[in-house]
Length: 89
Image 1 (cartoon, one colour):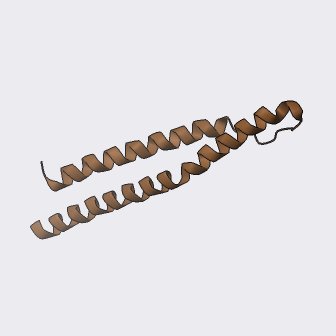
Image 2: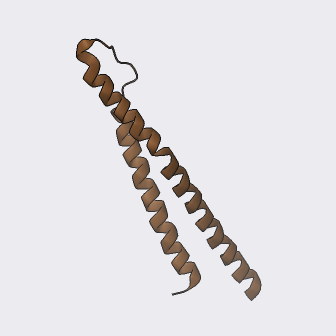
Image 3: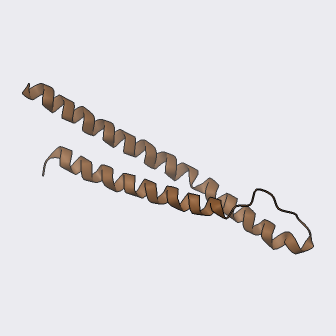
């Protein structure tokens, strides 16, 4: 198996992981309320909302890292493919 094939597999794995994390974040965001009314009985709802927002915020760094890694691998694949094409031309 050549270098480009290995990079394509790595890119596919990283991109699939990125998509899964983004789907998870989207699922969390659907449970987030835009507006809640707080009273003594709503304390548990407020706590749940803070937990959801905290989880969504924690996913920001992994999503950015995976997106950058996916882009870097893809750029490397394209660069290597162009280099090999130019070299064989």
